[in-house]
Length: 428
Image 1 (cartoon, rainbow, N blue to C red):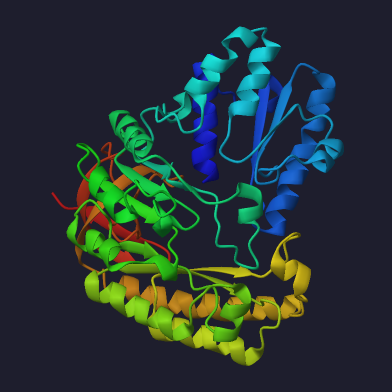
Image 2 (image 1 turned 90 degrees about the horizontal axis):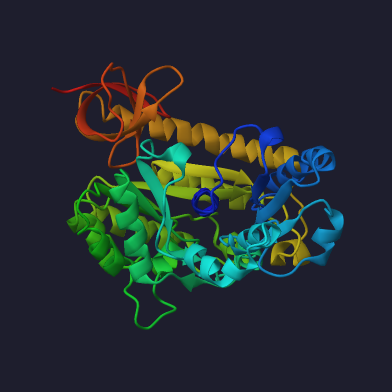
């Protein structure tokens, strides 16, 4: 989501006549877009922001804009007092405060209303920034902003606000604009993307939105993330199965494999219900890949409860497991009401057990691709000079070629597989 937000801000600034520079010392405007989903991310953002202070002291005309989840959707006087050298504080997904400040600074207040209307985040008129023009093959399109589910460990609802679906015409406009500029693949984004349209009576469901996007000429692939087990409908699964542009890859986090821990997390389903969902997904979408998220060391998680998570991953053999160690986030229910009582060394032990398990599972899954020929959409060249692309099931593939492959969808025979990527060659 932050990548999509940053691209929107860059596009807005270029419409005002600004252009990108790689060196902060040369900049007239610096935007720091922040994530605070974990404490380490917030600490990193604060450290980076503090490092910009000397630039401001040397150049008082420099505009520093703090944006994103560190700011949040509500006014934060404490943050402004803590960082008095910051000129503009922008909520997530909203370039308007920065645009307003720059226009007023340039003496163009008379253009304010018209410009803000044109540059509003959801204007459906996305222009790829100059630095990405001709290079961007895959792009993100937010469709649901905020979240209203409020898992007990999650800070996002407090920082990004309540759930709000975007107008379907704006989504289609963004997608058409991206394709016209060379994008081949789009990924629809939402904290719970399956809930798209449920807050508006006249909007389509996510399945309906996928059907509309499928008609766009030049759009090769469509993905969506992140899903929630409670909102994964048969209608959505059938669209993935039946519409060839919608990729057979589902990201549906479980977070923990024990029912009591899931209840403490306020997830709203059980271990058995998740297992049944995975079976349903695989039954309706043959060859599907499934990704999940896991948090280890949630408050009160015992060794026996962790074993339920381990057993679930061992049984289901999912394609991807994004692992995280629990850390309390100030303001969340778990931070206020639950003791962070699992020692850090124990969190690391559980993390590494799952990491080792998942590595062996994925290595076995990828081994099945050996000697298969699969379609790969190529995105860019890696630092080692190989072309980098992805299969329909979101597997990372590298190919040696002297040809220009960016943006091309080509058949590749897989020659080598590992747990994290595969190597292959082009099939003529």
